[in-house]
Image (tube, rainbow, N blue to C red; front, side):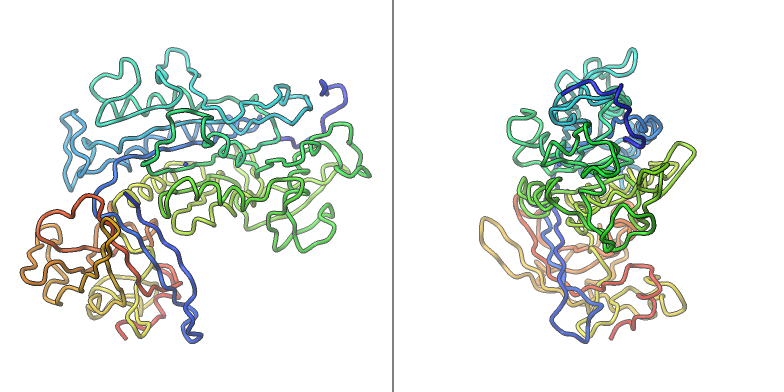
Length: 515
């Protein structure tokens, strides 16, 4: 980041279909707190995952990179699944313990936020074009073993990491630590979104992006995006407060990349209703569209560990305007990641945004891993489900909301308002709801006989390893009972009435149940 003006003396010159969730308000005005969700759920476990990390390598990111590397194993552990089989280490791989299970067939790539500063060159931005969105795979730690390709590859327990040994999942963790510590010499005008676009563009990094793989994109940064459409945004000849661009600091990225209610964005004070703008910086919608078009609907997860966006305030550094920190730790500060947050939000249930000021990135990275694994074959409902009359559909004893009214008194999950169809080879077949005596099994994994009712669907409660409400939105999941396995390529299309209120919230606890 550039917090201070650069002195003239420093100027040198010229991420089969996975789960998707698209929500829209219902037309009935009396049910404004309800949503209709359309889900696309694969009925076979997906195995292919391409995972791109966009890491800020500007001068303030040393501690954050160390935090990422230290806690990256949490993400990998969250990707282990019994359905993927044993990893060959002899450790247990079952419903209770997954430490010996494989992870998906994954490509992991790392790019920096450094794209230079156009045709200009100054401190930390000397290299024109920066790293250009190219995958970074050089060994960054003495004695470590990087992958033999520009990205880490793990396929059916085999890797492209020399001398990986028997525990190839551990080798993946070690290889990431080897290549992800990018250092802090990168350009202080971070262009995270453009770096991701270039990294995923055809031909930029051959072999990394596979046509049938699920895609995950993870941004790690303490600054907002500054993907410049007009390269003269970085013009160092403008330094004065009366100049159009103002001092050569990262405030330019805020001033010319965001618009707020206040006409004079340089004036000190809180700013409200700030949204991305376009002209000097690229329109964020272009990035949203680009990422979504890379894969069919629901096959992209976008996550960020970045600056919180709830507070936006301009202050002064001497006479110069500066964007105040939205969070601060002993390791440093971060500013609101408004442009990055808008991209994450566009992916709704397939997006996740966490604070880079969290002392431990572990929980955020674990949530990312669980979210991705859920999309690779999970059947979790993305929000609390409702009956046709708008009551909370639940299982007796489950706490769905805060307060006295947030505990389910009578099982009525079978009353949920959902329609389910299966699609195979372009043919759509409706699936009927299971009879009530097949709901509420003692063990949904074992109690699967459906007789003449086959095939039919029900909702079941899963444990937190499969459907964590804090991540997926609900502990309930679709369960289609059938004779044998679903034919390869089978997709379930699900439409359910859901609550706009979060699981565990006070508002959901105040919602009538079982209407």
